[in-house]
Image (cartoon, rainbow, N blue to C red):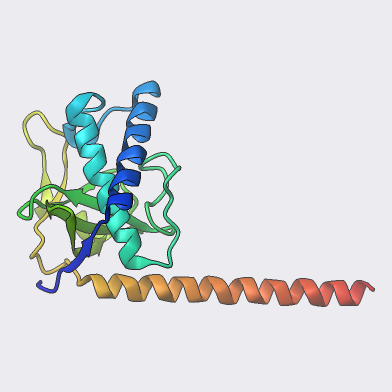
Length: 192
C-alpha cells in the first residue's frame, strides 16, 4: 500500500492516553468486561494493551482533526472517532488489522502501528463489510475468532481516502443542521 502517515505524540498526548487507558481498564474490570481476541483484561498486560490502543486513538485523532473523539464512551459500543471510525492499534508493523465478528459492518476500521513509539503509523483502513470475508477469518488457538487482514491486502485503502469520507460526512451533517435551523427560524417567523 505505501504512504503511511506518521504522527508523533508529545508528552501531553502520551500522558493523557495513559490516564484514559487506565480509566478504561478500571471500568472494564469493574463491569466484568473481558478482553477481545483473548487479550488480557486488567493487570499489567491488560493495561499495556489499553495504553497502546488509547495512544493509537490519540494519534488518529490528531491526524483527523477536526473530529470528535469519543473518549468517555464504553469501548466497542461507539466508534472511536466521529460516528464510524474504529481505531485498531497494533504494537508491531507486521500485525494484521483485526475486525471482530460482532463489529459493525458500516464502520471504517483504521490500522495504526505503535512499533516506532512515540511515532505512530497510520497504515490504512477498510469497511467492516469488506474485511469480513471468509478468506480473512481465523480462529487462533486460545484466542477469539476474528477477521485478520494484512496491511498490504488490496482491500486496505490509503488513509487519505478515509479523511475524504470523514470530511464529506461532516459537510453533509453541517448542511442538514443548517437546513433544520433555517426551517426552525421560518416556523418561528410564521408563528409570530
